Image (cartoon, rainbow, N blue to C red; front, top):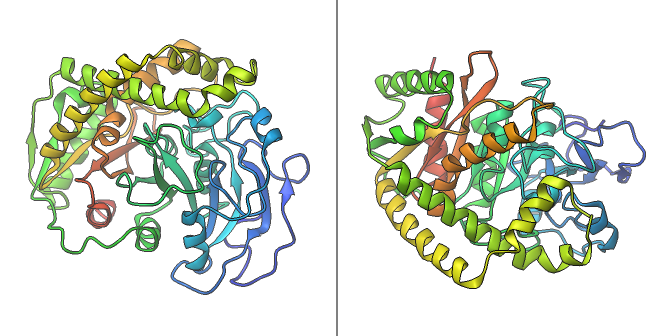
Length: 414
């Protein structure tokens, strides 16, 4: 298996290895190389191995999107996505192309065709999706960073489940050309790492500086959102936030009211817009390929197909209202919430249990999506049985670097 430390800058590639042959975990990787793509020149990311989610164009490779029937019809791309190219130009190398949930329309990290990548931080539990392959590659030490996407939590949830640092960037801060979309109104590029330092180094390459943005002067807590988490996660979350604010690692905290009925309106708007856009992007292909998707994702797309134009328009209005309200609360503030409602579900959890975890977690993760805001999951919490859970910092749009600076202090807190 190629790991992030198995080569030096400028070494020659021995060529890609397809998942049908090669001693690597095919639940994690679709294609790996030695490296798959070498760095183009020395730079600040020299020696950093990247696992790329199978939604990004990689020169010479097709996009598989977690769907074998889709992959079979795709042609290799002539050029890589601009985010991939920027990393190569900065000295990083690509270890390989890592798995994703089907068309990235899931938070579980399971795939009906390729299986569930391992979760080394919580064996026997799911990996979290849809950036599941990149997350597992990083957690296993096979890559230093996993480049992925986040629409409704697809970076933050696997980071939470696997004890990683996961950054969803400000919507539109990084170009998405060469990235297969799901719901463009919410799709963002992001990445997973094992520490804040590596995440910040990638941010300096991919995101314009925000040096003129003042640091937040208050920490905002939303008790109604915290109440959605399991009791042990709520306790761990409260204790950690209190410790961080007392130590000056976070600004003084203030609790703000967010009525649950308003949150329900917002998450419904998010899901409706996401479903509408997902069907516009993938519906024609799915309709022409019955049986190509696993049961859970197929059911999600079937529901998406029933969203009408008037329903979508009303949801867009509600989402716009939510965006303005949430951004108003983020001005001069950092919002802190649990990254997920609980630790990763067991791999053998029922469909009902998986669905409940998804539904509750989405009520947390949708806030950053609706606001187009950066959100950073930090591995600072533990459930009662010792499984990792993330603490999520959400900043105002355009404060990605400042959020990472704040996180560096929180990460180093005793």
